[in-house]
Length: 190
Image (cartoon, rainbow, N blue to C red):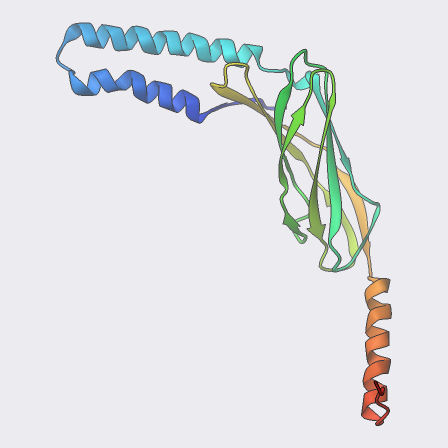
Protein backbone atom coordinates (compact mmCIF):
# COMPACT_ATOMS: atom_id res chain seq x y z
CA UNK A 1 0.00 0.00 0.00
CA UNK A 2 1.49 3.30 -1.11
CA UNK A 3 0.84 6.31 1.12
CA UNK A 4 1.03 9.76 -0.45
CA UNK A 5 1.29 13.22 1.06
CA UNK A 6 -1.14 15.68 -0.59
CA UNK A 7 -0.78 19.43 0.18
CA UNK A 8 -3.93 21.34 1.07
CA UNK A 9 -4.88 24.86 -0.08
CA UNK A 10 -4.00 26.08 3.42
CA UNK A 11 -0.38 24.94 2.97
CA UNK A 12 -0.14 26.58 -0.46
CA UNK A 13 -1.50 29.83 0.99
CA UNK A 14 1.01 29.79 3.87
CA UNK A 15 3.88 29.08 1.49
CA UNK A 16 2.81 31.95 -0.79
CA UNK A 17 2.44 34.23 2.24
CA UNK A 18 5.99 33.35 3.30
CA UNK A 19 7.33 34.15 -0.17
CA UNK A 20 5.59 37.54 -0.35
CA UNK A 21 8.31 39.47 1.55
CA UNK A 22 10.95 37.92 -0.69
CA UNK A 23 9.08 39.10 -3.78
CA UNK A 24 8.76 42.64 -2.40
CA UNK A 25 12.31 43.23 -1.10
CA UNK A 26 14.50 40.49 -2.52
CA UNK A 27 17.78 42.41 -2.14
CA UNK A 28 17.69 42.70 1.66
CA UNK A 29 19.65 39.75 3.19
CA UNK A 30 17.64 39.79 6.43
CA UNK A 31 14.45 39.19 4.48
CA UNK A 32 16.00 36.14 2.80
CA UNK A 33 16.97 34.72 6.19
CA UNK A 34 13.51 35.42 7.57
CA UNK A 35 11.85 33.68 4.63
CA UNK A 36 14.23 30.73 4.99
CA UNK A 37 13.43 30.38 8.70
CA UNK A 38 9.69 30.68 7.97
CA UNK A 39 9.86 27.98 5.28
CA UNK A 40 11.91 25.69 7.55
CA UNK A 41 9.32 26.11 10.33
CA UNK A 42 6.57 25.41 7.78
CA UNK A 43 8.39 22.24 6.70
CA UNK A 44 8.55 21.01 10.31
CA UNK A 45 4.83 21.75 10.72
CA UNK A 46 4.08 19.77 7.55
CA UNK A 47 6.05 16.78 8.82
CA UNK A 48 4.37 16.98 12.23
CA UNK A 49 0.93 17.24 10.61
CA UNK A 50 1.63 14.23 8.39
CA UNK A 51 2.85 12.15 11.35
CA UNK A 52 -0.20 13.07 13.45
CA UNK A 53 -2.69 12.34 10.64
CA UNK A 54 -4.64 9.13 11.27
CA UNK A 55 -2.76 6.04 10.15
CA UNK A 56 -4.19 3.65 7.59
CA UNK A 57 -5.05 1.09 10.26
CA UNK A 58 -7.25 3.56 12.17
CA UNK A 59 -9.87 3.67 9.41
CA UNK A 60 -11.67 0.66 7.99
CA UNK A 61 -13.98 0.90 5.00
CA UNK A 62 -16.79 -1.28 3.75
CA UNK A 63 -18.73 -1.11 0.49
CA UNK A 64 -22.36 -2.24 0.52
CA UNK A 65 -24.01 -2.99 -2.79
CA UNK A 66 -26.52 -5.65 -3.73
CA UNK A 67 -25.08 -8.80 -5.34
CA UNK A 68 -27.62 -8.50 -8.18
CA UNK A 69 -28.27 -5.22 -9.97
CA UNK A 70 -30.95 -4.41 -12.55
CA UNK A 71 -29.79 -3.35 -16.00
CA UNK A 72 -30.54 0.32 -16.71
CA UNK A 73 -31.78 1.02 -13.16
CA UNK A 74 -30.19 3.51 -10.78
CA UNK A 75 -28.76 1.44 -7.90
CA UNK A 76 -27.38 2.70 -4.53
CA UNK A 77 -23.84 1.95 -3.34
CA UNK A 78 -23.11 2.69 0.34
CA UNK A 79 -19.66 3.27 1.80
CA UNK A 80 -19.20 2.84 5.54
CA UNK A 81 -16.16 4.12 7.42
CA UNK A 82 -15.28 3.09 10.95
CA UNK A 83 -12.67 5.04 12.90
CA UNK A 84 -10.54 4.06 15.86
CA UNK A 85 -9.04 7.56 16.04
CA UNK A 86 -9.48 9.58 19.25
CA UNK A 87 -10.78 12.62 17.32
CA UNK A 88 -13.46 13.28 14.73
CA UNK A 89 -12.34 12.89 11.12
CA UNK A 90 -13.37 14.09 7.70
CA UNK A 91 -12.66 11.16 5.39
CA UNK A 92 -12.75 11.60 1.62
CA UNK A 93 -13.42 8.36 -0.25
CA UNK A 94 -13.41 7.83 -4.03
CA UNK A 95 -14.86 4.54 -5.17
CA UNK A 96 -13.97 2.81 -8.44
CA UNK A 97 -17.09 1.22 -9.94
CA UNK A 98 -16.82 -0.91 -13.08
CA UNK A 99 -15.79 1.30 -16.03
CA UNK A 100 -18.94 0.44 -17.99
CA UNK A 101 -21.21 1.79 -15.23
CA UNK A 102 -22.30 5.41 -15.16
CA UNK A 103 -22.06 6.87 -11.66
CA UNK A 104 -23.25 9.92 -9.76
CA UNK A 105 -21.30 11.25 -6.78
CA UNK A 106 -18.65 8.57 -6.32
CA UNK A 107 -16.43 11.03 -4.42
CA UNK A 108 -17.86 11.13 -0.90
CA UNK A 109 -16.85 13.14 2.15
CA UNK A 110 -17.77 11.26 5.32
CA UNK A 111 -17.95 12.89 8.74
CA UNK A 112 -16.76 10.21 11.17
CA UNK A 113 -16.95 10.91 14.92
CA UNK A 114 -14.22 9.75 17.30
CA UNK A 115 -14.38 5.95 17.62
CA UNK A 116 -17.51 6.04 15.45
CA UNK A 117 -19.02 5.32 12.06
CA UNK A 118 -19.73 7.43 9.00
CA UNK A 119 -21.82 6.54 5.97
CA UNK A 120 -22.32 7.90 2.47
CA UNK A 121 -24.23 6.76 -0.60
CA UNK A 122 -23.76 7.28 -4.31
CA UNK A 123 -25.55 5.86 -7.34
CA UNK A 124 -24.54 3.68 -10.29
CA UNK A 125 -26.41 2.63 -13.42
CA UNK A 126 -25.27 -0.62 -15.10
CA UNK A 127 -25.74 -0.45 -18.90
CA UNK A 128 -25.68 -4.15 -19.80
CA UNK A 129 -26.08 -7.52 -18.17
CA UNK A 130 -23.08 -9.58 -17.11
CA UNK A 131 -20.55 -10.03 -14.31
CA UNK A 132 -18.74 -6.92 -13.07
CA UNK A 133 -16.47 -5.95 -10.17
CA UNK A 134 -15.94 -2.77 -8.18
CA UNK A 135 -12.16 -2.47 -7.95
CA UNK A 136 -10.78 -0.20 -5.23
CA UNK A 137 -11.21 2.69 -2.83
CA UNK A 138 -8.97 5.76 -2.58
CA UNK A 139 -8.96 7.35 0.88
CA UNK A 140 -7.82 10.82 1.98
CA UNK A 141 -7.64 12.05 5.57
CA UNK A 142 -6.38 15.49 6.62
CA UNK A 143 -3.93 15.99 9.46
CA UNK A 144 -4.99 17.87 12.61
CA UNK A 145 -3.41 21.15 11.39
CA UNK A 146 -5.01 20.87 7.96
CA UNK A 147 -1.73 21.38 6.08
CA UNK A 148 -1.51 17.98 4.39
CA UNK A 149 -3.68 14.99 3.63
CA UNK A 150 -2.63 11.37 3.85
CA UNK A 151 -3.82 9.36 0.84
CA UNK A 152 -3.81 5.62 0.22
CA UNK A 153 -5.62 3.11 -1.96
CA UNK A 154 -7.39 -0.02 -0.78
CA UNK A 155 -7.76 -2.96 -3.16
CA UNK A 156 -11.29 -3.72 -2.04
CA UNK A 157 -13.06 -5.68 -4.79
CA UNK A 158 -16.76 -6.48 -4.81
CA UNK A 159 -18.29 -8.71 -7.48
CA UNK A 160 -21.79 -7.95 -8.76
CA UNK A 161 -24.05 -9.49 -11.37
CA UNK A 162 -26.30 -7.43 -13.62
CA UNK A 163 -29.55 -8.98 -14.77
CA UNK A 164 -32.24 -7.72 -17.16
CA UNK A 165 -34.65 -5.32 -15.56
CA UNK A 166 -37.85 -7.34 -15.15
CA UNK A 167 -39.78 -4.36 -13.78
CA UNK A 168 -38.97 -2.46 -16.97
CA UNK A 169 -39.96 -5.50 -19.07
CA UNK A 170 -43.37 -5.66 -17.33
CA UNK A 171 -43.84 -1.92 -17.93
CA UNK A 172 -42.95 -2.33 -21.62
CA UNK A 173 -45.42 -5.22 -21.94
CA UNK A 174 -48.22 -3.05 -20.52
CA UNK A 175 -47.32 -0.26 -22.92
CA UNK A 176 -47.36 -2.77 -25.79
CA UNK A 177 -50.83 -4.00 -24.82
CA UNK A 178 -52.10 -0.43 -24.59
CA UNK A 179 -50.64 0.34 -27.99
CA UNK A 180 -52.32 -2.76 -29.45
CA UNK A 181 -55.70 -1.70 -28.01
CA UNK A 182 -55.31 1.78 -29.45
CA UNK A 183 -54.42 0.39 -32.89
CA UNK A 184 -57.49 -1.85 -32.93
CA UNK A 185 -59.73 1.09 -32.20
CA UNK A 186 -60.60 0.40 -28.58
CA UNK A 187 -60.22 3.71 -26.78
CA UNK A 188 -61.08 4.31 -23.18
CA UNK A 189 -64.03 6.62 -22.67
CA UNK A 190 -63.94 9.19 -19.95
